[in-house]
Image (cartoon, rainbow, N blue to C red):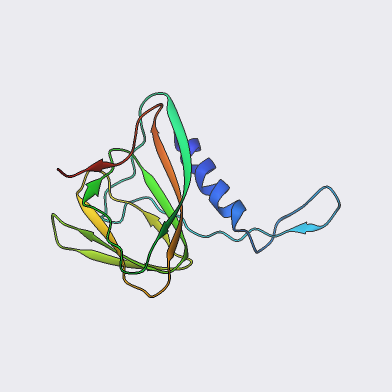
Length: 143
């Protein structure tokens, strides 16, 4: 299971690589820059993985300036790389907030109600990677 996390993180790093390590088939250097290494979520929880039939889902999000996502939670791990913009994520249970900017890596809280707001003047662009049980969704909206 830990290999799936490592694979997802390596995929994200490879997509945004810019510092050193190997050669491509033409002999040109391939540059790899580690972007993040995390063992806990944004709220300090240990990262736990689905126990069966893991599926990795990758999505691109764009959040307009001033937009606020509805209160929601994730039953499975969700990782996000902020490509652009400024995003404030608030745990509505504790009131604690974190602000993320371009280049930041987010390990979202698991099973805790939260919401996010684009607090900048430009769209927030995220590369989001979910690890779920096969066929499951990773966002539950608060009713």
